[in-house]
Length: 140
Image (cartoon, rainbow, N blue to C red; front, side, top):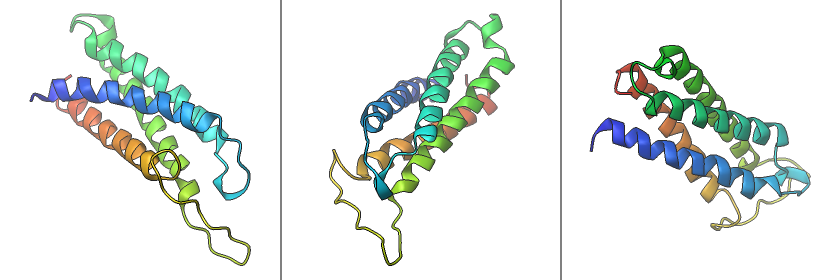
């Protein structure tokens, strides 16, 4: 499979991660150690959507187009990195807390717990690394 096709597939998966993270954590109104970091979630969503739009404009535009200039690709990559870092910040809520008044973390299932979030945000970070590699080597 060519690197270009891998980039296309990872672009679609990255959009799914951005949207599902918003849907899954956007309605979470818990308090205490499991509270969602709303600024990080907002950065993750906004940067992710803007990155997707910019990246698609860069990747799918013809090579002689103004949208296929390096500045568009670099801006989209910067936004992807912001979204990936914000996603990793969202995972910090699952770190165990130690102390006298610390509460136990819920069990991990696919609908509750860190399993799906780790898979999604880790996959997004790896995808952004692939995007960066593809851009640096001139594949896209």
